[in-house]
Image (cartoon, rainbow, N blue to C red; front, side):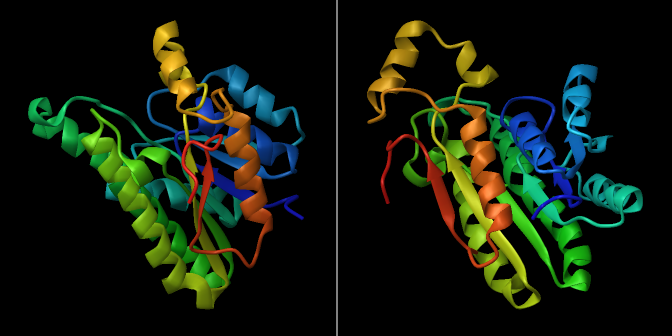
Length: 243
């Protein structure tokens, strides 16, 4: 069903983004792999091992013009963008009364504005083709909040609202737009946490374990295969919140 399609994934050099890239490669999709600071040869080789193309594209999604360049370059290389996955994101945690303006702005610029930038440019092509899939990576924090993450929670809650608005605008063009809200996932961010902190996180989760990047990747593939689901938020969190 997905074989031969082009998938553009932002922030795909590692973690959840890389897992999503590999999952789509297994489905036979060609991958436009966006990264900001670097991507290893091993990641590219792993994706190509499934017999698909992997085209790395450097660029900061918070830059409107650079985002257009990322999208245009993908279309020039593959002829289209069938699926866009807005995964790029950062954290700069801190309590509200200590949070700097720079730390607030930079998180919103990449997590929220970056999602707008990429979708804005990709949608131009999708509307002409009258088809497409947009998948935005939000977070459980965007739905429930979290101490020390006012900036991150605001950005991810914004992604949810943006997803619903985009879904309504583009539905008549046969374009779906959904969000995935991961809970606590085993990534580089959680790998540096102390054992007692990880235990505290696990205690908040009914399934008593962190998720894996592959759990998010499988959900992204599911949404790409689902042509009648749009404007939804799929929570993948082990039961941490149920809504």
